[in-house]
Length: 226
Image 1 (tube, rainbow, N blue to C red):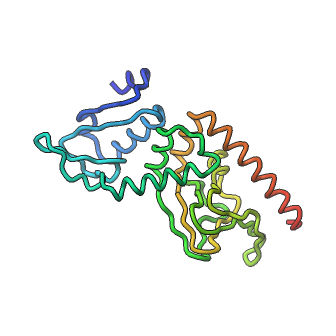
Image 2: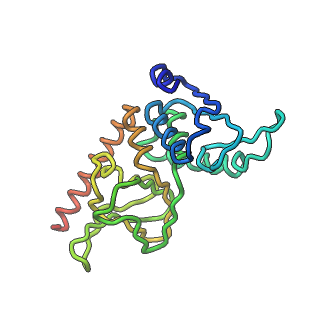
Image 3: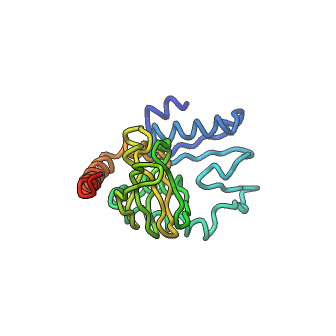
């Protein structure tokens, strides 16, 4: 059944009790693989019970044909989603992403709050996510010695950082540090790679944006003689 769906690539995939006998970990892995192979498809799961409803983008309880309290479909959660969508649209690289892909990325993104002076990631860390600055001010630093570092890139709202390491599948080359209280959208590496692989416009925008950022960073490094 899943093989046929993978071939036909439907816009909506409805699975009724298809994964009922599987563990939560296996269910999550299956959903991730389906999202990777069919990034534009909306997945709907119908089961008698869910052990981990928070693992789904939306969860609705129906009893005797009546929609009950989902714990997720609330004005607050919808407002939060719209806030994430607005933040993604303001980022140059995601501005032209179609609404379905944008919603998928927004659903999977997580807010990340950093206090002034907090290190978000460091050189040598695994590239497990990219960070979209939504509010505040941060910087990417080159750590010359344990006690000496040079600022390479100024990070303001609308700037995405950490995406190059994800594309190259390499460890972090720089340190990201909040200079003041800063709010980020954390975009998982797996979801971002899926969007890049299936949306040529995003790939093009991302490459152009990264090239421009690298050129500016290179010029700054040369000016500072790093």
